[in-house]
Length: 169
Image (cartoon, rainbow, N blue to C red; front, side, top):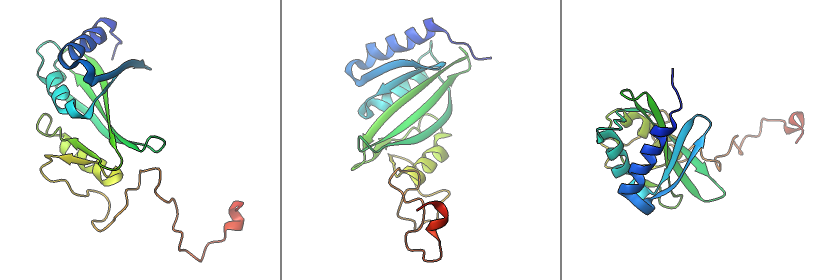
């Protein structure tokens, strides 16, 4: 069973702040997990340091997914990391401008990031620089939109066979 360990959280924040300073934008406890927001310019170095640090040993990438903040014109990436040695989990977040959605790949740290980054690209349009094979994984190759962005139309506006009066419109 996973336990909240305040000392471990403090150690993670202290090490990241010491090594990356101003690039660590924010840290907070969200529900049962430490969440650290990091500048995208150092995200790859932060992930590598969490993986390689002998005391922390975040050796497992649980999940990687995208987010869309339409009010900020940003796309975000969330990484959930787990240390089997310390039985500790953390969440790392970073954001990039919607106009230039580029984030360095994590595939060189965790090979399992390959498919997660492809899925995030497929649904949010985030380009993972250095990814070995960044292409659509679930949607058709000729699709031009990204369906999990908030600006994606939920229904086909060209359909003439629907009766909107049945739905209160």
